[in-house]
Length: 373
Image 1: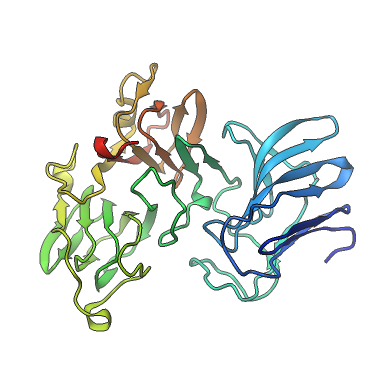
Image 2: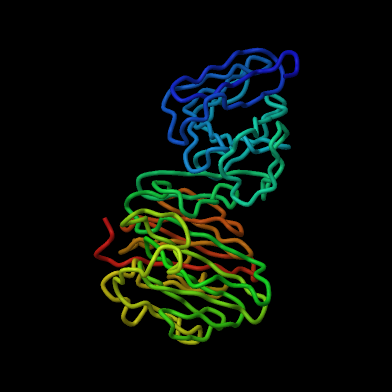
């Protein structure tokens, strides 16, 4: 470790900061859990500035986040979210989502111990200590309140991990997968939860319990727990995924009949062709977690009611930006959503949204009114 560094030690029950001047090294000597670490941490940085907050490992055991307060001589105190993988330009992101500012030299370098990481989440990691350099954008935004949750692309990497999304939504994953290749797809498999796909571009085919359906742009596919499904694409494509929480044996993987035996069906799956996916699902059945999920472009985003007035939602509503940007106002808090960012919004909140970029595309998923708490 460089001379004069601040060393933050994250262990299961104790978080200690050894205040010195200079850069910051982040290490995980225990790495026993990936749950919330509830003890406060105070990190003294150069020129008398200080970070104080509650770190947690949460949905990524290799991405610690410190949530708390920043203060420095001559600067206003601010709440912050600090991601340890924000190299090379770590920033503080305000809880309001409207203000971001550099650390002005208080923290110049963040390094993490890469040894014995049990999962890489598809990133190009090496089993050695090195700077983390795979942030998709320059900033990280995580805003969590009892009424909504907002995550930037680089903080929305979860798929099977449980208890990441708030308990008031049926969703446990909301992900965008661009740049799918010709001929790619998945093998026949089933899950211990429900899964939905929304193919926003591309053409191909999907099979639900052996029945073939065509995939065209904006096609919605619902595969309930126990439904054997597969797809293959004949053109380049982009896909989006929603999964619910695990049930039954809680196995976070593709379950094949050959290895795990035949599934126990729940309800039939269904496919909504892209040309017909223009509003609420005609008959979502008793188990499907959403009443609507579809692509919306610039004109449709701006048509979500009068953009100069607020709308009170009568059901949970979830947005994900694919291109361009969406300006979102929630209870008076303004946030700009960029590609890959998600907003999980609870029923009853006051919401306004708009888009200025004509290339904007976003997907919106709406739950059922009876599910809204």
